[in-house]
Length: 182
Image (cartoon, rainbow, N blue to C red; front, top):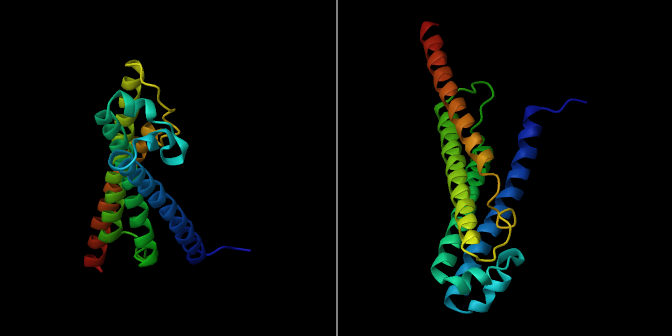
């Protein structure tokens, strides 16, 4: 039994939708929980999004609480944007296997590269910020629980995708030259 490219792309579209919904819930939950804590009920910091206890941070300084939750939220929103672009390109069927080297795909890979690099930067910044807060004596959850782990992987992925975007750029140039010579 062979699986066609069309079937694989359908499965990837379904998986991308599931992940997109999950990262949107994660980003929205973090933003809502931070807003609720800051504007309505500071006690909520003890039961922050996904049960993370940030009450020590909030008691230490609400400004630092804003900084930490902002870094977590930005990383979450960037992940949601990334999966939105993936869902969009798969849903709009912009991947033409007959002519894979297109400006549309190159721009897509370049955007994903920039988003991955941004996620890497903000998660790394969040990890360093959390470590700094712990050194100041603030009781903090593990960075993995705050969804700030894996910055090196995101940075690595961003660089690799940037290289692939440059390869696609060259492929488009060669493809265009071949079309002109025929």
